Amino acid sequence: PPKALHSDCPIQESNITIIINNETMAPRRQMTDAEKAEKNRKQREKRAQEDPEAREKRLQDNRARAQYVRDEKKQRLDQKVQRQTQDKVDRQVRLDVEAPRRKENRAQEPDEIQRARLQEQALRQQALREEESEEERRARLRDQATRQQAVRDAETADDRRVRMIEDNLRHQVLRAQETVEERMSRAMADRLRHQMYLVEETEEEAEIRRELNREQTANYRAAEIEEEREERREESQFRMERLREEREEDEELLRAINALEHAEILPLEKERTFREELLTARNRAGVPG
Image: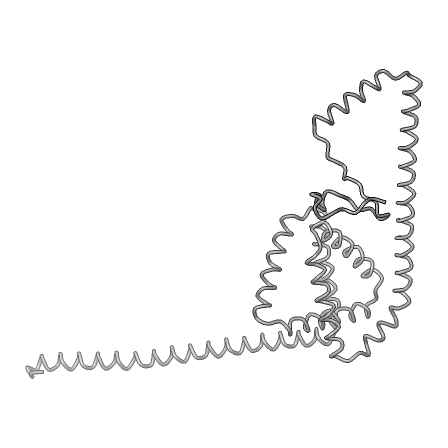
């Protein structure tokens, strides 16, 4: 075993490397460019002097080692992909089994618990979004678009309506808990992020975004029930009738004002004519005015 270092030994801790088996060894010194060039020159001279059989054996050994490394790496990658695929399959099976139970529990949970759960979920997602990089964000958006498209294709009209109601409730809860400063900050951040995304997105991503917007718009319109449509039509019809009545009242008021002004103008003109005729008659008779 190595001897213990005394306190008066001028050796710093960074100059030694401690191994697990308690052995000490000096760290490998970084070679300079001149030393690397000299080492390469010696290797070239040595290989230039070796016989063809030794050279062929050396190259064959190198190829065998390289092939072994490639095979090992490929085997590890295949095992990793297989484990990930199996994990995804198991996770999807577990989610499919738990989906009805979770859906039933969500439908029965109180409003306070639901608001707390949605708020916690929003905070957790926001923390994950702040830590992800640009490549991870784009990959997440592509995966999200593919996953949403698969879900939209499989859901029924009732499922779509329930999903729209849950989305509206979640957004209402989040918006109701925002302060004015948080709302303004969120709006500015959303606007800036949207502008940066539009500048950096590719044509494929732009097409995906437009397709998602069209799909969301179609889903929102399809989620309206007939009663809401009828109520909206009645409200629009009532508003149009009210505007027509106000316009008719304004026209009637204008006609009344015009008639009143015309009625006032006629007596004034008659009085002016009468006074002019009276003044002319007095002048003729020599009566001072």
